[in-house]
Structure formats: structure tokens, C-alpha cells
Image (cartoon, rainbow, N blue to C red; front, top):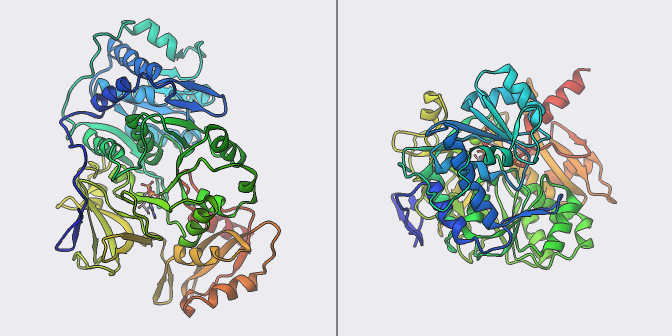
Length: 542
Ligand code: ATP
Ligand code: MG
């Protein structure tokens, strides 16, 4: 199974070998195979669905249309849309003919869209009618967008063609002889995805076909992904444009699952969808596990169909996970760790194994190590250092940024995650926090995630974020933003004391405790600590 050599840990052999195929070829085969399944994706808000047959045919017809229209290898297509049942049609169609896909965050304002689209410079953009005006504005302010196609209308709007009109104008109308192109999966870039922008501006990451194919074979491997079989119902609310939702969905289509989709997360719609569609498995961000563990709303719905909760994207407090698991009567939470730069989960709970607090073990074909930050030396069990990842899921790096790529991926192919953690004697990995988020108090370093985990154990605290407030003398002072659990009461002093009883004195909340209505998080559920701090500093300077 797991092999450890010179403190490098290697994942197990995959169930299916990595073939000389593109992601387009793999998905073409899978969608065609699942064509008898009635539902590929169901939009909860519109109660509309797409069958696997419709999905498969649309990808082929759109690929023909794009080809007939003159698009070719390496041309870039962007998708700028909220979660939508047709979101993946242009993506898979583009791969059939070797185009590069570059989905972007549709909630951005035009200024931000100009910036992120400026990274990939798409010639063609697929968007929804809600987003059309913003995309038109980006088109008028830049010079690369030559065509805009609307995913969710039948009619053309403002001179932009709808998907059905584009297909009927350019496709051959017959897919009997259609086959995706074959090209080199190792070298060819499949997608340019933006990182979350938690520590700076979002970076455009080049994922190759091989990177994505590893994710696809993980999805099919019960030891690596989830034990889901064709036709099983899953629910997705995380955004499709980000590597997390992007890779999860592609894996689901590979298996042939019935994907229940939320355009965005809404508490009651989420719970009701689990109940009404009898959802079996959900991939989550920690904030939603927190919601499931603490919200009284949860008791109003029958969630007994749930067999599996997965979680990734940010540190999950162990106690929160345990409460959710007990409340929903589950064997454990299946965790996963990955970066946009490493495509999808590289560390994951494998098979039936759950170890509370752990992220799981190295996934098939991948390798991981904990490196000493100063010497770079691979460390042994239970020693804390930087988590590094190697293998065929490690991306080609950043678009037009050799320097940043070299800083992230070293000459031996190790991707340095910027996160610190350790592994135990059983090769289970643990991540504590990011180096960049450490609070520097006098000579010591304090991990906000560690303090948040302790504070969340307090039943009066619904949610919390810890940030370092600048201080002339000490450098930074740990400070907490607290959301009180409805119906409970707690004072700032009680919060301070609660933590002080459980940590060493360098970690006390010397920067103070403030009460807020909610904790700001970015699209992938990560606390936007910089934003919080900015708000605070602005307030205090007024
Ligand atoms: P940016 O790189 O633009 O600042 P980002 O690092 O948040 O943003 P992503 O690629 O979306 O962008 O996220 C990768 C990061 O998410 C990891 O480096 C890690 O900090 C965090 N992460 C992912 N999964 C987990 C997990 N299971 N537990 C803890 N942290 C996680
Ligand atoms: Mg990052």
C-alpha cells in the first residue's frame, strides 16, 4: 500500500492506469457510456435537469460548431457563469478539439474580470444572461473577446448568440461519426484556473490534461475517491469555476452520478435539497460543516439519506467535525487536501479509513513530504514543516510567470504548498495552517486556525475568526471576531478567559475580542482575514 522512503510518502497504485488519453477522450467515453442514465445534473432553483444523453450530444455538437467556426488547438474559451447545468458543456467540447478553458469568478466586478480574463485572454466567452452585461463591458474594454455565447437562453440577446442558435448554425447536426481529437495529454494545457486569491491576487494556474486525468481516475477508484456508483445522488454548491468545484464535478460525471446543483449556497435550499432529492454524498467547505454542526435549522429536515460528507479547502476544526458526524450519524468526515496548483485532492481519506483530525493519506500516483523550511530536508513522523506535493497532478505553474512558478515548484518537481503540518506513524497527514497567516507575537508564532479550533468548542460561539492586529511593541496581537450562537450569551472577557485557560500565554487574545454578525469568507470558504483586518483598521481610524 503506502510506501515511505527517505521520508517521502508515496500513494498506492491506482485501480485504473493512467492512459495516453486526454481529459476530452476520457469524458467522451464516460458520457457516452452513461447515456442511459436519466439525470446528469439537476438545477434545484429552476428544477430543470440535463440527462447524460443530452449532455453527451451537446458536447459533441458544440465541439463541431467550434471547429467549423474556426477555433483550433490552444485557442482559449472562458466560462463566466454562476453554477449552471450547462457549465461543463463548453468545457468538455473545447477539450475535444484541444482548446484551453479558462473559467472565471462570475461575481467579480468588470474591473476584476478585466484583470483575470487578461491572464488567459479568451477569444470566446460562454456566460449566463445574468452576467452578460458585465462580459459585454469587459469586451468593450479589452481587445481579445471576439464572441460571446449565452448558455441559458433560447434567443440571442444584444447581438450575442444563444447556445442552441450557435449549435444549429455551425454544427453538422449529426454526431454519429464524431470523435474527439487525440493530442499529448502530458504537455497540452487543458485549463487555466485561478487560485482563490487568499494571500494576494488570484494566480492563473495551467493544468494539463494529464493533471486532470489523474483526478478522473481517482474518481473511479473506490480506494481513492468516494465509494459511489453510477446513478447515486450527490449535491454540489461550491462554485464550478474554481479548481475545487471544477474537479469534483468532472469526477462525478466520470462515475455517472446524479448531480444536484445549487446556483449558490442558501441554508434552507441546501437542507431541503438533501431531503427532497435524497442526497447521499456532499463535498463541503468547513464553514458548511460548522453550519451542519451548530445550526438549529438542521433539525427541521430529514437528512437521513446522507451517507458521506467530505471536506476540503481550509482547516476543519476536529471538534466541529465530530459534532456534525454524531448529529448526522455518519462514520466520519472524508477530508481532502489540494491546491489549484495540484489540480485536486492529493491527500484524502482512503477507503473506509477515518482518523479524526487527519486529512487522510497520499492519493494514488502522488507523493508527499514534510520539508524543513530552512534546510529543505524531508522530515520524519510528527515533525512540523512545509507540506510538499509531487506527481502527475502538479500543474505546469503560472501563466506568464516563470519566477513565481520557480518559487512554487522546485527543480525536483516538488510543489511547495505554503502550508505547514506533519504526518503520523500511519502516514496520515495533518495541516495546521498557512505560513502566511501566522501571527507574529513577540518572538513566537501563533496559528489562527489553532485558536479558532479551540474557540469553536465553546457552545456559545457560533463562528469565529482570529487575526493579528499590528502592534508597535509586540509586532502583532492575536484578536478574535466572534459570532454568538443564537439564544446564548457570552462576554468578551469570557471569550478571552476561555482561550486563556487552554493555551500558553503567548496566544492570549491581547488584541481584543469583537462581536460580529458573520465571518467574511471568499468563494472557496476561506476566511478573508485581510479583509477583516482592513475593516477593523478603517473603523478605528475614523
Ligand atoms: P492564493 O494562492 O491565491 O493566495 P489559495 O491558496 O487559497 O489562494 P487555492 O488554490 O484555492 O488558493 O487553495 C489552496 C490552499 O487551500 C492550500 O494551500 C491550503 O492552504 C488550503 N487547503 C486546501 N485544502 C485544505 C484542507 N483540507 N485543510 C486545510 N487547508 C486546506
Ligand atoms: Mg495558494
